Amino acid sequence: MQERRIFVTGASGGIGATLVKELLKDGHWVAATDVVKPELVTGKENLLTLKLDVRNSDDCKVAVNQIIENFGHLDTLINVAGICYGGDPLTANVDEWSETFDVNVKGMFQLTQLTLPYLQQSKRADIINISSVWGVDYNPNLLSYSASKFAVEGYTGGLRAWAFPKNIRVTSLQVDKVDTGFRRHLGEKGEFPTEQLRKMLTPEDIASAVRFALNMSATGCVSSMRLDAPLWYKNDTGND
View 1 (cartoon, rainbow, N blue to C red):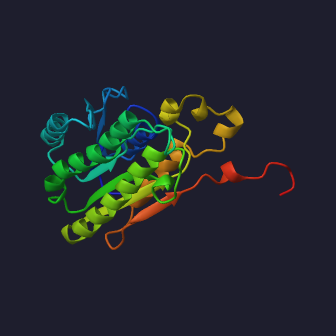
View 2 (view 1 turned 120 degrees about the vertical axis):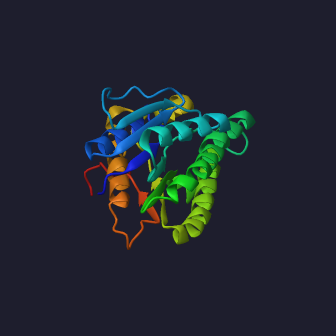
């Protein structure tokens, strides 16, 4: 993979933090951002850490300007930042619904829009949006999250059609259950015993998929990729 200048959101933990570490190992220059400034490996010339609330348009503008100032250009944007609340059609909270769409959809949209002028200048640009299996399937118990990821899928598809003629590849990475702290807003419903956590995808699985998409040759693009957690559905009765 050619050395890149990469912008990653949601990088203070979970998928984002693991992804940043793997990209740094590959020799890329990485800007790692989150609502709390990521505490990652220090002293690396090719790592820039920034505090960024993707809901705030001014924050987004400042972050993009700082990245360009430090890196000179930008090749890749990876939208990881996201939140999840529970709730069905009767119990979903309207404030949590608004927050979910502000982070998962609006934040991704406005940050992408700000980076597009720089991505268009790259010889090979990529945008990878971390989506969910609940953006293509239905989940009535994670209603706001599922609806937001359907919006992510709709936006990503439209962005892809617009971006291809400009030599920008756009990927939707639809992930199943991942063992991270992402479920913190779900309370007891987001807590699982260790044996169940071991059946989930790992952040390293997601990082591998991202690297696969970025490694595609110029003649191809991984437009969408679904990562299921097969062990989660495995029959452990001993009869299979």
